[in-house]
Length: 187
Image (cartoon, rainbow, N blue to C red; front, side, top):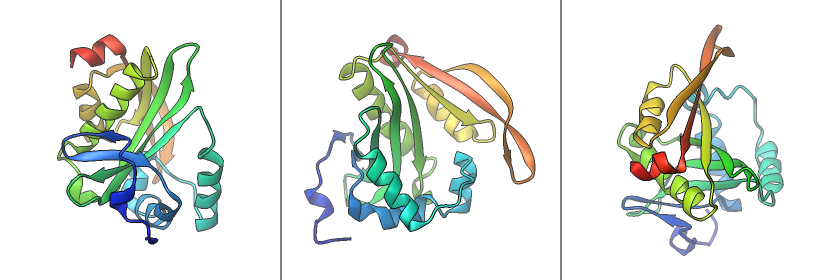
C-alpha cells in the first residue's frame, strides 16, 4: 500500500459493518492477487481468462473513466480491510436499468451477510440516486449462497440460460435474476 492510508479514502457508501469506495491505483496488486488468482473465487464468478498485472492495470485505466459503470471495493468499517468488490454495469439512464456483480474474495467473510449488505448499499444508490427502475444480474446455478443473498434483496428468478458456462470440464446453467425498485424497497 502507498503512503495514502485507507482511512483517508472517501467512503462512497456506508453501512453498519462495511463501506464501499472507488478502486484506487494502490489497490490493484491486492485486487490482482486476491480476486483474480484465487481458484474458488474464479469458479464462483466463472472467470476463465488469464490476467497479468499489466492487464489489470489496463482494465483499471479503461474503466475508471467509463460513465456507464461504477466499480467499488468493499471495506470493513472497523479496520478498513478490503474484503471484495462489486460493480454496477451497463447503466442505462434512458431505460432506467443496470446490471450488478459482486465478489467477496476474502473467504473469512463468506456466509456472514457482508455481500448482502454491500449489494444493498449499491442497490439503494442505484434506485434512489440514479433513479433506476430495474437491476439485473446473472449467477451460476452452483453458487447457491449467492442466489439466496440476491433473493433476500428482492431479486426474482427471471430465467435460465442452459449450459451457459463450460468450467472444469462441465456445463453449468446461468440463472437470470432481476429486482424492480418497488420490490427492493419492500425488503
